[in-house]
Length: 93
Image (cartoon, rainbow, N blue to C red):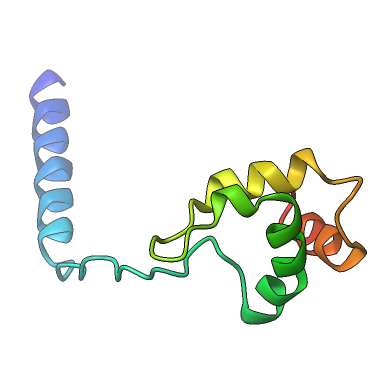
């Protein structure tokens, strides 16, 4: 009985290894600088609010800190425009 259990376990483990070995290697994720920044329309909806309420976070030569801007927009939620509020709500924020 124990021999049968050990044999069955060995066969299952070996077959699992064979199946995993047949999966082709996956390519690395593509770096996208716009990930987390929304669509062009969403950025256009929130741009005036970002300039107005979060201008200290936007630097001309640097990539903006998306999370800091999101936090700023959330902090100023009652003051930002309705389209920008809809963008945030559409992303669960």
